[in-house]
View 1 (cartoon, rainbow, N blue to C red):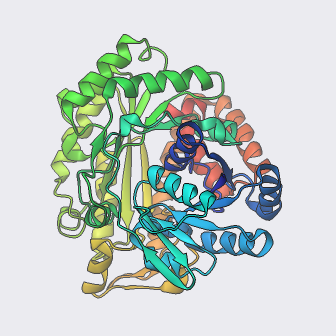
View 2: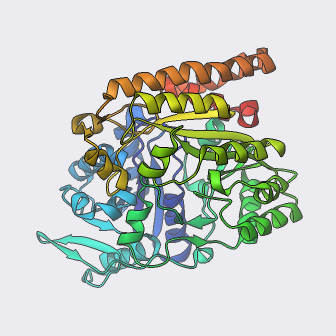
View 3: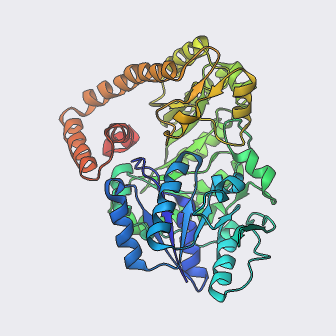
Length: 482
């Protein structure tokens, strides 16, 4: 049996190279008797129906799988409707949204089944049953429609030995070279899950719904060798960095040290720099020293807000402004570049807290400040707090938002969506303007030449202007580690 797995990215965001989908397709191909292909609309958004037709006619799948994230659900519905009407294939949904909002997902008429939690074992069992025309009862991790009813099977525990899964095969992405060109890096994960419970994130809801230890780590030395493996394939195809997509790469000091030792031992530290995500309270001399040993170049930190009160009481992130200042000072001591993420317009936000964020961003002066707009994700504490604090969600606007980069659907007691969006523009004008001037002064004509090349390729691949400019400033060639 052949399954076509769909990445429903019609937003134009060129960074959405889905690691989970890659793991799933690779597992099906390498560990089961079934076959999987990946259909991705990222670079085909203007002609996605025609591209879909060509891919389905090429692969002739028996089953469709669609990964579901909350901000892409309007795309999921559109794509599922098209597939059902034209090809009448069974459709299974998976991913975070399907795992947390399973009943809502199955209310979409065209979706026949939903996978809850890790998909590798559950999808294999479902495909076995479909192929053998066997009953769907007892397929752990799958809820399946049958004759107007829903078979609600047991929710399977999360896969604990994630080292047992095969190395993701990114060649399954037809446009992998486009991703490498626009991002200049490849994604890796050394863990699944997260040990923290930030109120704006769905991770806590996943822990509450799906049994089994949520935070699972890989062997750090095997992780280093995986990067070596992928570098051997893509080193001449714009792979200039390995990005560890773990939520908190610096969480475990001993794990980080083992990774750095192995990365240096196999000669990768001198070949390929690394970037990672961390937290303000997990950046100290010891951790940063290990990361720098592995040629760590970029550390990405969720700062969220300049208001300690909001960060602690609303976002459940008890990290002081002083901790961020100290951590960033340590990063600079070891030559690391810093990306700082802020959230604008969340629960309890007002004009005063926005000004605090702007002032604190000036104090930190990170290399790449990113100002996200708060989006109320389902089953999160922050969403509930928004309502408790007198805020509201403009549901109609939310239906048309597909990213964290722009577009607000939230009203707080003091702010409208437009005021939140306007403040983001002010942040861009000041902070991004500063970055453009600095890059121009250091690169001169190279900056213009690289920008025109990047912009033109984005134009040919129908990448929205917003993403062309934003990703050029943080990903393209010299800008990646400047």
